[in-house]
Structures are given as structure tokens and as C-alpha cells.
Length: 556
Image (cartoon, rainbow, N blue to C red):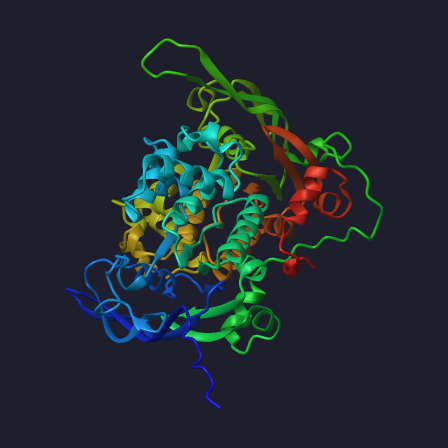
């Protein structure tokens, strides 16, 4: 009896070796990478920065820059080699159809083009013989498929008129325009809140089940892997060190590196059975005593005004970013501010730091009230509060060395310090941050993400502030680097006896760091209380929805 030959996998990478050539010589980037991808399968690729995840994804898409070359191995689609060498070929010849979903949805969409036009343009690029009527019909169908409400009405809207989650859905719709066989999704949810992330992951899973598309999901978020991936590829330094079924790999990893990644993931502790639900509102939750408060905001209002037409004196549109927000920052501790995108948490942090004015309200620091509606430079608030921003690459001056950046902050914090004293303070800080002193002569682009964020923390501390506002300081970092930064922040608050406002949408991270928590929604304080009250006893429906959006595998 003759049995039919086993069908080849949809995508197969065989012993792929990749190097990058520069003036300094050739550097190996990928080492003997091999894996298979079946139809209707989601393969998660996980690893720290520098593991080669994105390089692998760009290789599959054909978006590698000059200098990259394959030294051995091949990429096969339906058993046939892709192009001449598997690199740089973005055409659809030989049946290869691949699309991509990138991390930054704002950079993936043209802000000057209506989203309907962008969809139509992509559809025509893959099928130029369709009529205009069919193209529009297909675009509307895709918008409806990814869950954009009332697609006919929203068809002519611009990207800025959509929320972050909706923009990512539009990017997914664009990725589907060419009816791809494989989608390379590179960190598609890392910039999204937990609830929006859960919706996008559910959408990707439904697309796989309905259209037989396969997805290569590149991420450093173990929660995303646990939620959606069928199989997992663990990469380190350009090599695949472990591969297996998701549940098996997460429950019983074979490699120490995989176990380290899993151990670094913050667990959300939700002991809802320990006591009956109670509280659930800002008014019902006890606030810190006045003597325990380092900083407080009193009835902060912030309204942004825009005109319908930039070139006219048309009617103004007013949007309330903050509405009667009053919070208290615990002295010598960390107070958490939680909220989804658009909740107003970053705006509140910038007002507290004196980087933005409010429409009304006061900031009270050590008993002295500052008018938040006036310039912080004029009121004297500016400089008393330091801020650690979300993206360290953007917040560091690329033209200044790390030593110059830290020295400038040291002189700002203590204007009477001489050159030698300033240098000594910088050296002591760089040692405390666990960074080599050789980094002082380097520029920001020569540092890793974790190193840059440590420099930002050191810069804030050298200014000798009373309060530090940390705005999503770990959201772009790998789980192991995030754990190191969290430990550093906790140690800093304890040793320096400073107070910190920690802004984040990661509930597990906030729970592990903060004693008091405020939850913002639509510019208002929706819920507030101690960490135990919020996570174990709050009955607020919005708070419970945020907690339930956390992947169940990482809830203790």
C-alpha cells in the first residue's frame, strides 16, 4: 500500500545563518536558526533585546537593510525555497504572501491620509485589477472584521481620531489586505493597556481560526505568549535555545535561561476570597494621614482645546483630560497611578513635575501650595520634582555623553558643587547604578535599553529632588531588565527616603511596588486605596475589569 507523502509545512526555516558586514568586519547575527510553521498556527518568538527576534522577523518579511547577508541555510514556503537567497525579496512570486504588524501603530499609519484611503491603497497594491467599488467594499469588510464600529462612517476619519487600540486594529486590517498566508507580528501589543491588549490578542486568535493565516508573534511579554501562542521559540544571542508546546514550555522549561525569563514576570496577587468585597470608590478608601503626605494635588483640572479647522476661526472643541483630580503621594514611599491610555495619568504626572500647566488646581509640596495653572518656572515648582520618562532613548540628549548628562544634573541639584565634587558625585552614582565607569564617555545610542533607563534614574537622583515621577519607566524593557530596574527603584526610595509617583498600566508591577494606588478613568479618580484594598477587596467594576484582563497564568 502506498501512503501519500506528508505535506510540507507552510513555512520552514532551515539552519539559517546571517551576518552583518560593516567597516569593523563581519558580525554573526543569527546562528543555525531552524523552525517550522503550520497553517492556522501561532508561533511565539521570545527573548531579551539583542536575541535576534526582530532580525529573524525582518528576514522573513524581506526588510533587512544593507550589510546583511545569509551565509548558509534557507527559507522554504510550501516546501519551495523563497527567492534566490531568501533575503530582500518582497514580491509575491512563487506563492509567497507575507505581511507585517509592527509595534508602533502611530508610525505604521500615515497621519495625513484617511484610513479608508490607506486600506484601498494597500488592497490595490496586491490586486491592481479590482474595480474601485470592489476595493471599497473589501476595505469596509476588513474594518468590520477587525472590530471597528460603524466602518462606513469611520472610513473617512484620520488616524488621530481613533484610540490606540483601534489604530492597532486598523494596522491589522492593513496587514490582511493582501490575504497573506503568514503575518509577522513584532511586539503588536507592547504599547497597549491590559484590556486593549486582551482584545487585540483575541482578534488575532479569531483571525487565525477563521482564515487559516499563520502568525509569527515576536514579543518579550510572557503573558502574551501564554495567552495566544501554540508553540514557543526561545532565542538568545541569535540562537534558538529551546522550542516546544506553549503549556509544556511554560510549565516545565528545560533551559535555565527560560526559567529566568519566567521567574522575572511579575505575578498579580488577587486574594479576593480572603474577605468579602467592600469599598470600591475613592471616597470609601482611607487616605494617608496629612503628616504622611509628601505631595498632594488639589482639584486639578486640565482641558485641551482644538479648532475644527486649523486655517479658520471655527468652533473650538474642548476635551477634559483631567477633571477634579486630587491625589496624595505617600512620604518616603511609592504611590501608584494606574489607568488606560487617555485616562490622564501622564498629564497628571507632567503637571506635578511642573512640565505642563493645569487649567485649575494646586500642587501642594511639603505644605507649600503652588498654583498649577501658572508656569512652574515662575511659581518655583520646577526642579523640585524630577521625572523619569517612558522612553529613555528620547529623554537623553543624543549629542551629550553619559558623563556630561549626569554632571549637568549634579550641578543642577547642588549649584555650589565644584568640578571635582561634581565628578565624585557622578562616579558614586554610576557605581550605585551598577554600570561600568567606561560608559561615561559613551553616547546614548551606544547603550542598551536597560542601561539608558538606569542613566535616566541616576540623572533624576543627582538633581536631589524631593519627589520623583516615574512614567512607565519599564514598559519598553525585557522582563529581566524590568526586574532589575524595579529593584533599583525600590532600593532608591528606601535608601534616599524620597517619595515617588509611579505611573503604569501594569497592575502586577504596581502591586509589587506601591503602598497606595489611584486608578484613573477618563480623567477622573475612579478608585483609590491601599494596595491590598484595591486588589483584594475593591468592588469597583472598572478595577475588577483591569484585574481580570491580566493573563490567568501570571495571577497568583
